[in-house]
Picture 1: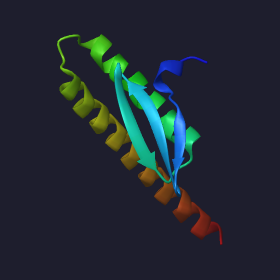
Picture 2 (picture 1 turned 180 degrees about the vertical axis):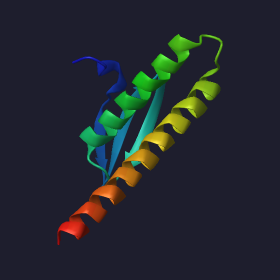
Picture 3 (picture 1 turned 120 degrees about the vertical axis):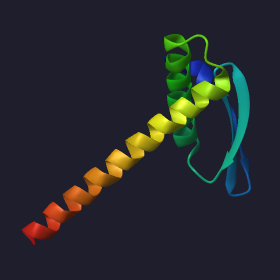
Length: 95
């Protein structure tokens, strides 16, 4: 599967899961109540965005690339919330 390097092993920890992921060559252990596949998908997305940011500007530090990725994700979230609110207004108008 493409992006397999961003995936890692999982171990249950009580109700929490421990997921090892790799983002831009760095290994991270994530403990989460979320489904392990979901955590892996998130890590793969961050890995892809980080690699793209670094490829577009090789002078960026990893920290700078991470900030740009965070801003991009925040923008995506804000747009999705705005769209959700618009759709909810449309649903209310139909009722």
